[in-house]
Length: 499
Image (cartoon, rainbow, N blue to C red):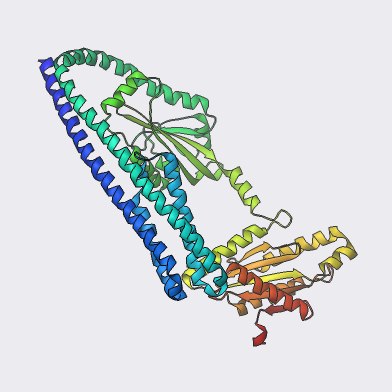
């Protein structure tokens, strides 16, 4: 009876497998046809662009800007629909990298073409060479896509033939079902005993992690209940009452558990396939690794709030799921990163950091149509101070100026050391007149007879067409005007024709 039941069950499984393979064959054919169609659309779109390149001179700059902007948007959408990961079964990694390289190159040069026509007055001389280079890249890309389609057709045909042969061969297995069912019955009895033995490996694997780790570590089940933790963890979270199998991890990480649970969701325990069961039987020493994720957060400990990275390793044996979480303190790393952004001498932002902040604020202002001003401050006759009183005294002056400016800037402003004796303040949501008031206050604070300090200040307000470079240039010109007008002054940049 058991043999008959096994025969029936195995026959049903074979029928399901045959159906899956048949569906897979159909899906593969449809997938290849769909992929070839998308590649053809992409190729035709690039060809349209190339034909337009040959006739660019017949259109004005506005028409060309509108066309290439629309083309770039449509191209990015077509490439996104292509889903390059779906090409992996049919092309090599080298060809995939080459496709992505052509895409990156075309996108970069397309952006240059758009920029050239958007700012045609500035880039007029570069338009023709840019279009010529973009034309060559388009031709190469079109030829490569043609070769890629041929290669996909060839490989997909070979893959389909192999799958068809496998499908036909699998049907012969049904002739051996009767003997196989009897053998399976015997094996199943042995397997039941063996699986009980394998189940202990999950706990041995977890125990090994605890023995090797000197960091705080805990284990949770699929619901988030804490099943185990080490002494380091209990010391770090001594302010929390912890009980195994009765305390939820939410008590440790709070509402971050919702985010962590979403990260763990794709790795939830699912019924094991025959292949997975076979792999566990043949290699029982290592539980199946479902995945590994990291999550960064600030967490309250008995030693205060600390930045932590949760290194989460997910393992499974049969129906048991465990997540081993190691808590890695990031305090030193974050302190080092913060130090890199500071000027070591004055402990305010360095030039790289303040310029990056300016770039971010310009982008924010353009996006939300906000005000932005910058202030350049330069110590007058600083070389004379150094020559007369010595460099140690000059160093003292630099530090004093930095700390004095820092006292006056608003909480929303950003102060940085731009050069040796030059400082810059980025003032969001601030017009030139407001920035001038801030600069005048700073100029008054810097008038220190004991330190022989005076400063010239240049102010510039961001205009709609400004880039970072143009805004810096106007602030620098305002500073030059302040120097030219006798130093120790605050000047808002104005064009010569407006004065």
